[in-house]
Each structure stands twice: as structure tokens, then as C-alpha cells.
Length: 344
Image 1 (cartoon, rainbow, N blue to C red):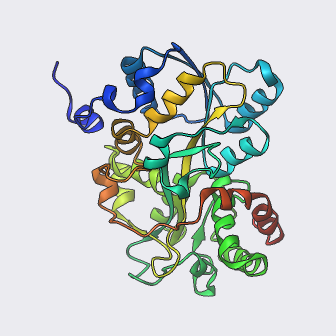
Image 2: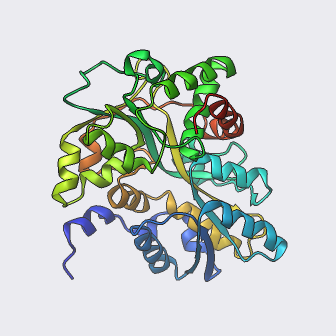
């Protein structure tokens, strides 16, 4: 069978069967997965895991809050073995609600950087996405904006677009600023950002990017994989958007760019514990990491894994080393701060 270039890139020549010790010793043949990820490339992850282990993946897919509420209501009778969410704020809420159990793994400890995992082993980040500034090439000079703090500079009045304060990505970003500067300075920053809005927040990250390309604003705040999706698109209209925009990685001169995670943890009442452990270790293998990167333009959490061309084109950057659990714990306070600032 001849593999397509994309298929070869995803597999990267790696054999899944040699990936993790837990894969070889797993005895349970079923994994019940509760997931709020909704990306087509994840289908390949499930298929390759089953091929390597013989473990069938039964999925329940929904938005994160309904999934966690379902787990709470099911209690000890929950069939969930693994919970997968996007954003550290959500997986941390699951931990705080007692929905996850700790898991010690030498493989995960050695592969996943400490900043992308819960210190007590309740959850692990398996892919990352940077929250960056997407600026209009023709209207924002190189170096004109360099930090998240610059978003509050009055010179950008009427120039900034960003999602609502209810969006967890923005809560985590503000949570990281709260960790860096404290409550008073963070609230002053949030008020400055609101004063610079080009329009009231609406839509998702891609909508913010499109607003900049359309001339409605000069600066959008968005996660990198949304821009990556436009960059790898074959649609002429998407290519035209990408041509008008430059990626700016904020805070390269100090703490680094805010990076969030897609994460997973073992459910508190997991019945298929060995399968759950095998799946988490599988997600940290080079082959699985390539699916995240090449299939969805995410950054791999594991070092040494190639980046897809559209992501590599933006260049390397310094990431904020703040543990994801810290800014996740700040989410509730961050939302209060944004609401007081008028960030609707």
C-alpha cells in the first residue's frame, strides 16, 4: 500500500508498537473515552492506538462542561476511563471537582515538560497552542507591538479584536498575566484592552483573524492552531487572509508567550485502568505527537517532534514556563477582573 505524503508525515516512520511499555502489557481490551476534542485528525489517533494494542476505543464526545457534569452525575457508576479536554482551565476544573485520579508514569514524567502537567499527576498536556498576536502586515510595523501588556497602550485604540471574557482561552491568558503582575495591574491592563476594542467581542478566534484581514482591526488575539488551519487550507479566500497577517509571539524579552494545552487525565472511577494508562502513555509517543502537529497545526508537547511546515514558518519562540495549573487556578479570578473591566 502506498502512503500519501500526509500519512507518511503523520506516522513519521515510527512504529507505535515500540512506543510505550504500557502498550505492550495492557490487558484490558476496552477504553471508554470522554472527549471534548472535535478534530478529524483524532480519528487517526484512535485507529492507530487500537491497531497497536487491540484496545477498542468507545467515545463520548461533547462540550467540556456537559461532559464533566455527566461524570459528576454518574458518580461511581461512570463508565469514563479517560477525560480529554482543551485548555488547562477545563482539565483543572475536572481535577478540582474530584473527577480525576493521580497517575504516576515514568514515561510521561520523562516526555511531558513539567509546565504542561499537574504536579500530582492528575492530568497531562499532550499538545500545545500559543496565544499570539495576529497583526495586519501593512498597518502594524515590525516591533510596533511586542507584549500582551502593549494591548492596553492607548495608541491601539479601536484596533484590537478578541473573544469574550467567557471564553476559557482568554481566562487562561488573563490568569497568566495575573500570575505575572498581580490583581491591581491585571485589572488596569484589562481596562486598557477594553478601551482599545475595535468592536464588542463576538465570534471565535478565526473570526478575530478574519476581522484583521478585512480591515476592521489591526490586531487579533488568537491561538496559533486557528491560524494554522487557515494557512494549510487550499481555499483561495483563506490563503488571501494569511497573506495579509503576521504572527507576533509576545513577551520574547521577558517571561515568554502564553502557551495553553490540550490535556487528559484518568477518570476517578475508571474501570479499565490499564487501558487508560496505556492510552495516556500512547499520546506522548512521537507518532501520536505528530498527529497533533500535522493533523491540527498544534505544537507537540514532547520535544524533538517535527513541526508542520505552516507552523515552522512562523519561527521558534520562547514559551512562558508558568505551570498550566497555575494560570488555570486563576481562571475564576481572571473572569471577575475582566467583567469589572467591562470585558463582556
